[in-house]
Image (tube, rainbow, N blue to C red; front, side, top):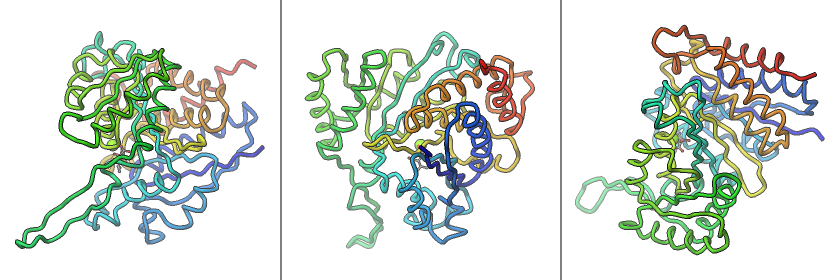
Length: 363
Ligand code: IPM
Ligand code: MG
């Protein structure tokens, strides 16, 4: 059966990192006999420039038909002055909503080779392996009403609405419980139930599900405390589940614990495990087009795609092992290079992963 993959290179460093992942995909497609058909479409700023909208109808059509999607990054200073509703980031939110990608999995795993690249002391992060499960299609990102209006007194006022239905909370919480069962059996639900009614409901619904998962130790934590605990003692966590905006913020913090946000993959899944895979980092316009970006987060996102959407776990593992061997060999892009280490560029890093895949093949 041929599976359809859609590539959305996007903006900034997106095209460079996706190009390396595409080369890695071609390599594993060959060695694991995967039958894949690849297509490319525009999303974000590049789509605004070429097709007049951040998530054009042509991209939507291809996205709906794809078995899995690999995205680079969207956004950049060029489009920063556009009205909020027309910005590249809205394209990303629109594709998440169109495909109902409510579950965003953001693992923060420390490669032992990078322990000293973390901003925390090596003993605090050695062996770190946490998974943030972020609700992705609801909460304050999507709540209505929203806008900037002129009030009766003539002042402008901006507002957004933070809302979650029981059903939205239950489906993401259930997935987080399931993932916790498969991992270390611990789940931390992050909310602000001491202030926000919406997250008071969140806490109630999550608590209600707990009895179905007697083997999972559930705890609740306020988001401010969770932010502190993540930098104080991150290894206390196994799986964290939280709403859209808290997950956005906490996943950047968790990313930095691992040495570089340039290392972290993510998966956004719907009920049918169809998904969009993307590096957690953004479009990094300051280094775009200079062959400096770290392609490993995108390459690792590709591994997640092979595992979760394409049913090719061996190919996923081969990629992850190849990345590990490349790090063992001392290869570093600028973001993860330490004092005195020579750094390589984006395409040299891609070359090294492909070389490691070839030499690691047991045939
Ligand atoms: C992320 C990003 C996006 C988000 C932006 C680009 C809209 O920060 O994926 O974490 O806030 O969800
Ligand atoms: Mg973010």
